[in-house]
Length: 100
Image: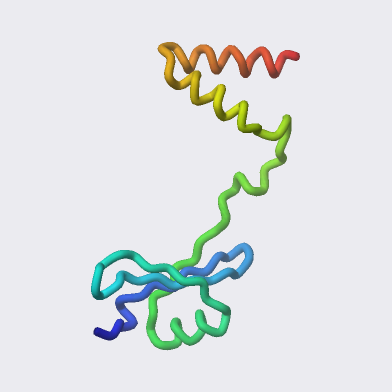
C-alpha cells in the first residue's frame, strides 16, 4: 500500500528550522516519525503534504539557577512522593533552600 499526501504531516520548528514528517504505518497503524532535511520538507509540502509549524518550549530560554539535579535528588523526590503530605514536605524543603 502506498501513502498519499493526505496520510503525511510535515512539522517544522520555527525557531531552528528543523523538520520532520510523520504518518501511520499502513500495515500496523503505528505512528512513524522521521527527520527531514529542508529539501525533503520542500518536496513534501510541494507535493501537497500538510505542514505544521511549532516552537521550542519557552522553558528552554529561561535562566537556570541553582545546583544541577543529581541522582540522589531524584531519589529523594521519589521517596517524598511515596509519603502522605509529600507536597507540604517538599514545599518546606524549597522554602528552606530559598531562605539559605
